[in-house]
Image (cartoon, rainbow, N blue to C red; front, top):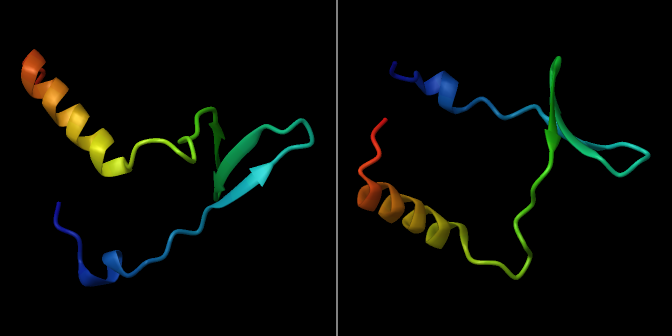
Length: 64
């Protein structure tokens, strides 16, 4: 489904919430998603990770 120009300009409205026990959630409207993994500060750039996923998928013949 093609996005209209107005759909592209809408800003995300979610926020990061940290509970007293340190658990983090991304909250957007009535949806709450528990954050259980983080990228390492000194880790590999996102672009490299995406390339690895594409290569792995191509090598293993996975399809959508």
